[in-house]
Image 1: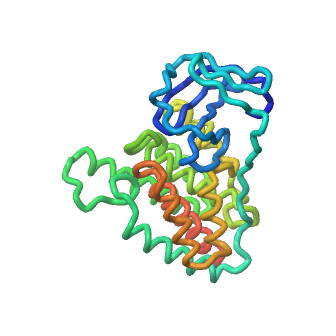
Image 2: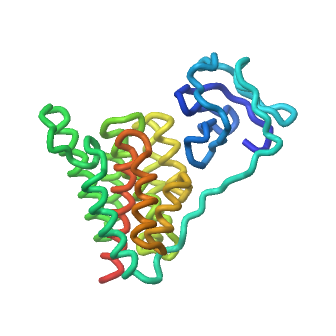
Length: 279
């Protein structure tokens, strides 16, 4: 949004964020308060709540003279905006550190992750929820096994079947893929050479999920993810267990089950990378 040539409308309004649809490139952008971390297509502001500012879905949004006008209720000055870009680390030179950190992260998720999405809930009694958990488990396992064997067409099939599957504004299957796509975009990583799978999956995603989740998938397919995810990946590859758990805690705090679903995609992707490198 730094180009100041911007025209669109309010797509959706939440307490901590407002999503904007751009008419020029058909991408979704977000205005967020400072409780949120940096992310692709996101402008962090000093605002508190957005839900009580009189904004209406469909309000016109445009930029003019260093200002962004959001309907008639909100004007933001863009002159002093600092540009943030997502940056992922390269894959580990020392897989010993990564292996140890991956084990620690997996154990932490098992204890502290939120169940109900990719993480199985011991209290699930509803038959619909049980079937959802079964499908998530079956398709994510099939995806990881296909990637392990280098079977790209099967991997693409299972990944597409995950899109839109599960609870949440960003469905659990989508969030798992965001984590996995992040790992596949680590330069020099064992999965980097087959990262074109990400683009193939995204090409089929638009009609299978909602625009908010689709945009997260689209960005992750090219290695563009929110700051907390990038920092966690850096700690996994270079950090101590204390740094790993601190970074993981931030990821787990994303959404309801989204953080756990993303984290499971990240950790399973890293475990798969270690396995492929060990052959």
